[in-house]
Image (cartoon, rainbow, N blue to C red; front, side):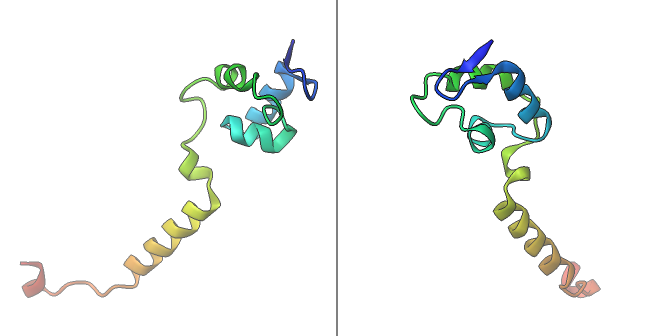
Length: 87
């Protein structure tokens, strides 16, 4: 069945993109343009993606990943507190 008639995107295509990591309507739009013209299919795409089926958006966002990696490496480079500082 067609989800996006503007671009001829089917439910199967949306599911295939979801299986390869597109977990939000915005990511589906980036993969196949569905939802970027009239927008009437966005709710159907949301329903197909469901809730909790994909990792959190932040985990997929390269900016957040880079920030988290920088924070983790900065924390790892800090010296261990002395016994007096820890108390």
